Image (cartoon, rainbow, N blue to C red; front, top):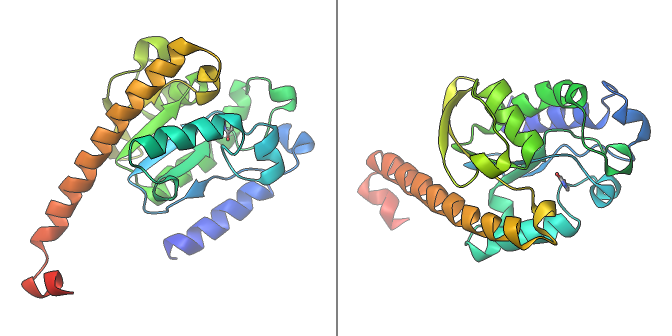
Length: 214
Ligand code: URA
């Protein structure tokens, strides 16, 4: 099955999932969106009202800030992949519960296995804790302590650089997280460029002179 075909299958499973209580109150599940060959995957918390209506991740106020953070750092939203640890909106935007995160875990893991990113950025505590503790086998000490650094974990059989940062919603009205987010996105972009360059070098070795004329 091609990546595109796998994504059609996986996203339709997510759209029709009734694996936890959130399926009863959602309008639409939000599988995620972006490039299926992205080197960078961003994982948020859960859809909010706008995302639940649109069926797309990060399209509300937090999404606008996320778009800006990507854009000012020279990253197109369409070249990364964006998803959430929980794919359906928790009622009244409450925090997702651990069993909801774990009910969605097979989907989250299949997305990571499908895309095989080199970098995962976690947005906020729920996603940070899931990626560090469940996938990476590490310890999560809260986003304020963990952010601003890169970590390497073996995740689902591959080495992945994990860069945790605040959830954009936390930064909408607070200057502290906002400055941290801006700083962290510079780090994310610089690591991302490094990855892209190293992959060009590797694939460059296999090219012939003719490829450069095309
Ligand atoms: N907050 C999230 O964590 N995810 C979204 O998709 C939107 C807001």
